[in-house]
Length: 114
Length: 112
Image (cartoon, rainbow over all chains, first blue to last red; front, side):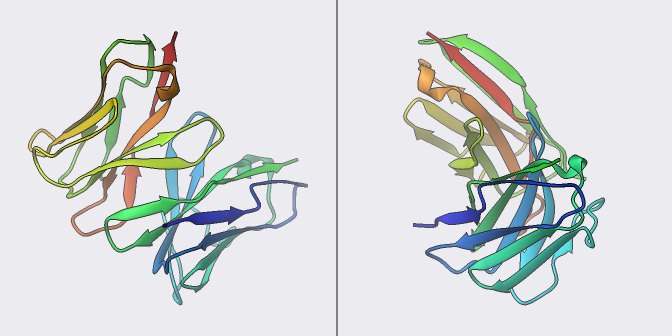
């Protein structure tokens, strides 16, 4: 149980375009989802916390107008990288929370912006 | 501000040897996690430690927590090549919170 999926698993786009990444909890309802970014050989940095039906809470230094998060249902959250630039290239990982104790991580989405 | 520091950041060891990864954190928390990440993959949950003195073991990995020292250890016993990965500790931001702060990660390479 507690499976989280992400789609797509990898994406290559041109600079200036927007990319949407989906995060789904497949077998449980997640009241909270988290979005992380991981640069090569670095740790995970929390970008934002997403609660179903409410606005996401962004970490300091994360531009909310650039990284649009929508948590429309208890099983789906989306991250849209708007007007992507090469410096946005990274590994984006979502996690979904079932209660307070565990976060279950998705497989990640590798974004490359040319 | 909660800071989480791991050491060592890189560890190369031989099969059959024992070693320990350390995770220090700067403020009180009620949960500490250990995760494993293989190259190009997401995180696999290993352990959650909730109380002072907690010890959890799975196969060749054993994790412990000392909340007074704000220190957790991940001990590897008789390492095998399959344990090669990057290991992260993560600490809950504060009591009752869901937000996690991750350590830098320890890249473990186990050589035959």
